[in-house]
Image 1 (tube, rainbow, N blue to C red):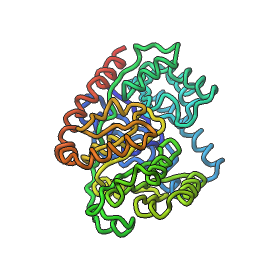
Image 2 (spheres, one colour; image 1 turned 45 degrees about the vertical axis):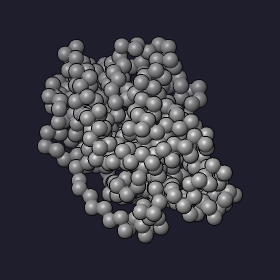
Image 3 (tube, rainbow, N blue to C red; image 1 turned 90 degrees about the vertical axis):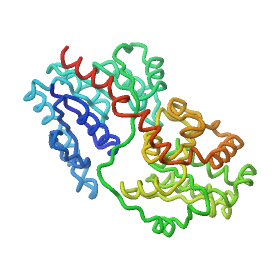
Image 4 (cartoon, rainbow, N blue to C red; image 1 turned 30 degrees about the vertical axis):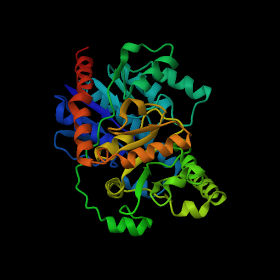
Length: 389
């Protein structure tokens, strides 16, 4: 059986981990179509290089016209690949870069060519995009594939309740799974101390990383530190927020800090608008004590599983799929969204819970719960059944 998996420059670490997992445990001959963003060099993975967006294009701006031409050429090459490789029946899209074209037009062309389409639904709708047109487009998108992979009960329920014409039998539910990193990284904690002006020996450090967006609840942390409820935690905890943000939103956060208790915030909150390399991200995960995810809305979070990969407990708001994968007192705690008192209480519970701070114990627990076999057994069966159909 031949299997083609297609990624579109999103979530590098998740994509690489998924590909490695499938290659290790699936009997399929695996073909991967993705840009040079992905560092996939395993012998058993056939990397098909038909994209033009190389690493150099991520470092230097290219014109809109050049991007458009490159995309058109890429789609033509992808269709040629499908025509040439008739025995590769299953095409799995991990992401759609342009949902309307790829999710509808391209997929219909591939189906006409006899391909079985699989799509991973990470979010039933894109973050912060919930207008009538977007909902209509995605209702159509979810009808077309032969199978839809969802990574939580929450997303599955959302799909079923918001898509009246969806055939529920095409949904395959699994889990996000832990991350696989092929490189070994050295961590120099003294550099982190100096660069961020923090000290993980003197304070309990909560990390929030990934893209800095409006739905991440950063305003809640700012207001919480400035509130009466933080009094009990003064000098004991610090929040480190690091990730890439658009300029206007980051400026609004800086303005909010100035209008709040700036002196208190300066000693308990460090926020940087900074893209993290893989090495830098892993270093912070090893350095900090817990991940904090005070999201205002969410379906699921790859950051949560990234934390579990490194034995980091998670403190998250009661939204989306966090209920599915956070076990109170074992892998983290869930607090009531926008509730300062409950947030404070859960912070104190986490700090006092020495068992949950045992990285080795938490890692062993999550490695067993989210083992590759447990996470992907249904996916392997799905690939095989589609190939036989």
